[in-house]
Image (spheres, protein in one colour):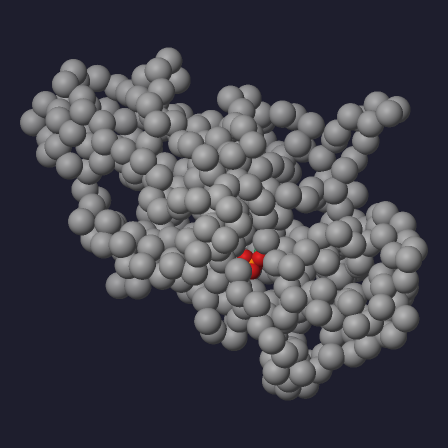
Length: 389
Ligand SMILES: Nc1nc2c(c(=O)[nH]1)N[C@H]1C(S)=C(S)[C@@H](COP(=O)(O)O)O[C@H]1N2
Ligand SMILES: [Mo]
């Protein structure tokens, strides 16, 4: 049977990807998590949709969907994580959707470079941020509003920031923002406004609900702590095999998982099987890329029965590392703390990690190989940017 998303709240839909079904580098659309604050808007035919640019531009413009679809397209592979992903694991319960580990996915996003729209429209020199408004509306804290978020001009002009029309080669589905959404690689999902209707260029820092009341964190400022909108993603990892509570035999086991670093490349993934006392580097599949998670694997040979705590800790190229303690100033967001997984080992059990519903290891590796075969372009990019392989 095909697996599907796991519903966390049903109206509006908030659903996550059961990570045991995340067997490849790319998350299939049908499994890709959905984070909706309001019911998706009635959209109708893509051909009837248009999005408008207004505010501090020399030439306010409206682009019908078909015009964007006919323009040169840019594709970027990127991991998207909800800033609240993992909230249910917090020791102190935080308000909000109680996500497990699966409010995350990795897909190929295709659309028009935002700068190809902004540059011809002529940003005025006072332009500081662009406010993106979705067509969905509803109430939060008793106040009627649309879903609206801003982006600093520099990130809006970044060549990888796009208005996405396609996801994994298919036209966007209604739940993921059809027929067009902003897509901001390397940033938490909240930045990527779905059902995009209006872009407004402004000369100040936007104070919208979804970046001051929600999706904001406390950070030190000149006069003490102040709320800051959540932006770029941070370093994090997941253990896919073995799962929490797995019962293993003596011998050698395969561990596999994912690691990602927002806008940065993952540089290293360390695994501990003794609750964090000692660590060994895992093997990274392929060449880690900015924005994209990378798959990692390692082997563990265990000769003594007992209970073990497995931990995984990822590092990025600039030395960002997963913390061991949750920072309460993250206010229930940005949950990248190293999380221990308990497994028990005893004699007389099989030595391979097997799961009733998950692919066996060999299938797993074949999926890796298949997905990695799609990556020559990425490798070429790594070479041309002088990074080598
Ligand atoms: N218009 C609109 N855009 C939105 C949202 C929303 O509720 N409405 N949710 C945001 C959040 S918090 C996340 S994590 C991502 C989720 O994208 P997905 O549902 O396609 O996975 O969309 C973002 N864009
Ligand atoms: Mo989110």
